[in-house]
Structure formats: C-alpha cells, structure tokens
Length: 298
Image (cartoon, rainbow, N blue to C red; front, top):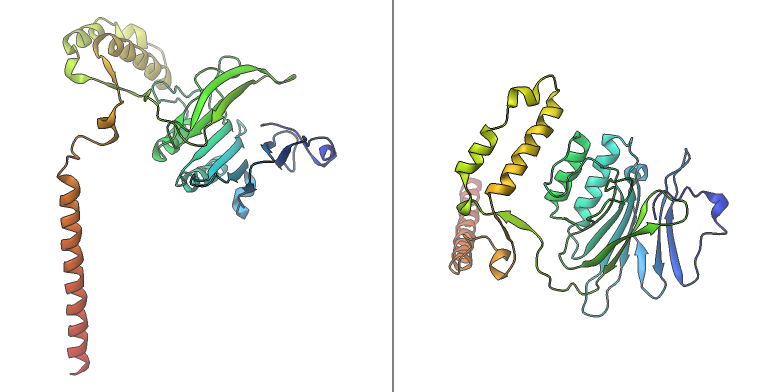
C-alpha cells in the first residue's frame, strides 16, 4: 500500500491476523508512507537501508524461496510528485543494486503520468530519467491500464519475464482516488510468449511513409507553439505513419533470446580467446618477475 498517512497513533490498528507487517512512515510532514503485508507462512526479512536511503519512501523485503527455488525481492515505493533529483537518484541506485537478484518485483505509485509505455517516451526530464533506469536494468512494466483519472501512476515492474502474471485493475479501496492493481507473483516463473514487438523494416513501405509525412502542412501545424508542443505534434504524426507503413513482429521463440550474431561457433571462439589471453597474462607476469629479479641482482 502507498500513501498510508500513518504515524505512531495508528500502531494499535494496522496489523492483520495471519500477516507480517512492514511499514515505513513519512517523518517531518503529513502524508505519504508505504507498507507491505506478507503472509506469515512465508519466511521473509526486510533489507537494511543506508542513511542516504532514509530520504525515500520505499520498503525492500526478501521472501525466501522454497527448496531449489531462489529468493524473491519485493519493493513498494511512493514517489511524491515534487520529489527532487537527489531522492530520485537514491531510488535508482536501490533499483540498480536489487536488479542483480534472480527475481525482483517493484510496485507502487511513481507519479510519472507523462510516460507513454507503449512508445517508451516521456515529456519531462525526471520521467525520462526514470525510463532510463528501467531500460538500464532490463525491467518489464506490466501495468497496462490507467489507475487514476486516466493516468498510469501505479506501476508493477519485474526483472524476469513470466514472474508476474494476471495483472488486473480493480476498483478503489475505500475513499482512495487510486484504483487497486491485482497481480500474481509466480514462485516459479512460467514460460510465456513475449508481448514485445519490433518494427520489421524489411517489409516497410518507405515510399508511402514519405508521402504521408509530406502531406502534412508543417508550417501551419507547428506555428506559434513551443518546442515541447512541436515535438509532441511531430511524434504523433510520425507514429501514425509508422503504424500504416511499417509492420511489426513479435519477439518470441528460441531465436529471440540471443542476438543474430551469436551463432554456434561464437561460444567456442570466445573460449579460445579467453584461453589465449590467460596464457598471455601468465607470460607477462612471469616476465615481470624475471625483470624485477634481474634488477634486484644489479
């Protein structure tokens, strides 16, 4: 849960039977706060944070996996709309460190309504920084519908395809103006067909593409507008032409898991180069030891 608005006066009333409660309240001003309620049959522990992480409203918990299965790290975050760059960078460092785990699920209200997840674009600098963090850590965003007044604020991200499934947008809880996001964390990630698509330029009709963009009266369409408005207008026309002229294909199947240049011979060549480098390095070390011995002997 995000924006709990809890403080010490709620200590007696926030627990739920059968669940272990993790919470982080906002200090110094009203509002904010996050919490996680985890079934007490699951073995879990809160991950410690450094002093600089205290400025963020986020909770990180490790849930121990069953025998033979890895642990899962879950995080809930509330990012206030007026949060500064320093706190954002702290969250990005947390995400970067946690993304190295085998299974990671991030959830919460990140307050980036201007992000278009379909095109992976954003209007504002802070939103573009967040997108860059998501891309750099190879995270997948699974929420597909708005959660507050037509904006997609509440997100669910994971670093493992198939770990999160059955994501649905439900009604609001109580008097909250956000809708609930319901989803399943699958202890063993199932194989799924990728929803990612790629543009298939080999089948593109670039003649029609140029013609469609050439019909637009750009001087009139962009007249009297700022740079940001001009960019959004240009992007809209570009994407419309792209949909008509450039087909897409799903990035699925066994061949999509590795780039086309990685053929059967590639691993063996890499192994040979590593062995050659190791031999060269050993020879260099031996030479340096011999050189130092000669120098010491005068």
